[in-house]
Image (tube, rainbow, N blue to C red; front, side, top):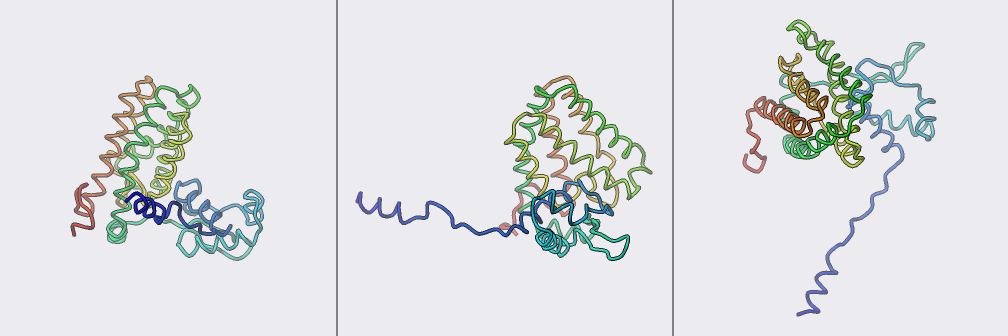
Amino acid sequence: MARSATAKKFSEPLISPIRAIATYELVADQLRTSIILSRFLPGQKLPPERHLAAQLGVSRTTVREAVRAVEAEGLVETRRGATGGIFVRSWFKHGDELHRLITAHYEQLAAIFEFRLPTECAATRLAAERRSPQELDELLAIFDRMQSLTATQESRSHVPNIAPFVADDNAFHLLIARASRNSYLQSAVETARAHMFLPIGAVFERLEDNANDFHEEIVKAIRSKDGEAAEDAMRRHIISTRDRVHAFIGRSPGDSAAND
């Protein structure tokens, strides 16, 4: 019996096979993440190929292959001529196209929200307790910009305001993660947001009326160094966003593809 159990134990794989990753795939992943986190905005020109190669420590050929990969995904376009270069395309989806995208990736999106709840809530509590005065000032500046973009019905309906709001929304959450002083939480928050393939707060063709409400609560709690209130505000913010996305496609948070 003992020999059989031991044989079974060692017949099971203890480690996973290694897949060789081409360097251009790693570069493409960095470009993709930077675009989705709005470090580069739609319409913005990326640094020249030679600069990207120098910054990343790779060859220009590798950069070229990476650009081709993200271009195939519709994230960038290459324009020729004197004023050409690599430009970020608008990757925001709306209406029926967004509905199809969310439905097709529903399980992934639901898992991301499940992941965000414990990680971002923990990061926000720690940020409230550990943030520096400089980080608070930076957070307030980001919040003020978002407040300006969502101040009126006209500004919320102004389509060009969506991209800068999404950029500030990402910066807001990533700054909180950094202020937590926990590198694992910071990495987790960035990973989760990099996999959110839709603009939070702008699910439809305008910024939502309450797009900035929870940010204000979060800022107030972090400003007063109230970790419990900050964590609670972030939890309600994520749940509210999750529920709006679910309602958009007519599902509830407990649904799964297996039940369809």
